[in-house]
Length: 193
Image 1 (tube, rainbow, N blue to C red):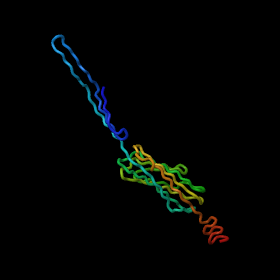
Image 2: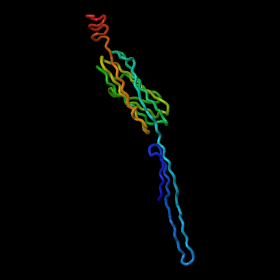
Image 3: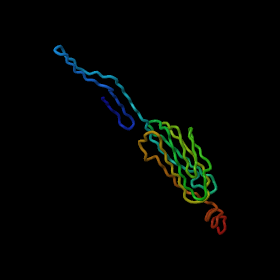
Image 4: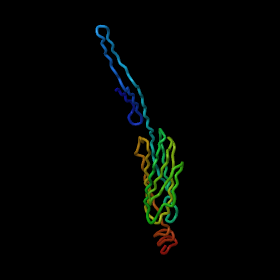
């Protein structure tokens, strides 16, 4: 049984197999001799795996956010190719001050999102090479302070560069009615301002 394997072992490989090889060496007494090879069954198989460089980025608007007003996070997933990537999954973990919940989510290009607390999971059947998809997450901050949005993306196919599969966007939420804010204690128009 002979096998010949070629390819880079990551995105492609090829196997050629000779299923059965018989070597004959027959000597007919005093008359003649016969030798040779007979090969039964020959098969070839080629395997190719898709490869795509997924990356992710996050923006927030407005920046900074304002307490009591909608804050929209836009998460963009890019596929740098060379192939379409299937089974693309995005997870976005939010950290915001005060009492807050996710108001709404949306995914473009046939994707879907679901929120559980401040974690949003989105998925797309595929993202073509050179293409991108987006998810939006809308929240209403309940307090002022630091915020973060951590997005992580992966797919079913080989990714040659996983260093760009995570992105963290840090920002702030301001409280116009808080200390030092307009209308707040010590702020313009507020008591002591």
